Length: 154
Image (cartoon, rainbow, N blue to C red; front, top):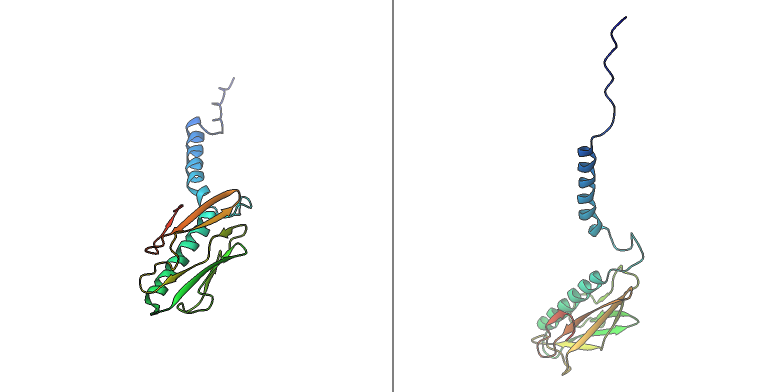
């Protein structure tokens, strides 16, 4: 009788290797999911991006009014769920409008003017601009006395 050959090693993964792979996949998912662009996983519009655009445009309009010159203003208007700033191009090189490249975002607010020299509002009351998208809402406040712009209600 010939001696029996040793058993062949079994192919497969150890429990440690499987847990390690699941841990790495979990970390990658936590890092990658927040970076997925809006609309890729569903039709939800990006309300935060619309707020960023609005705040940036308002700050640019205010700065334009501050350097524009005496007796000139930058008009900010809200119509059809969008905004327009300096449509008559009194102070800015090009008029601003939005929201840009975002579907499903609507904007509502009271029209107002930024004025020279400090960018304060012509109106006496603070202005709240409301943005709505996908059942969520946000707001941007413009202070009458200074023209200061910040997120949230007034």
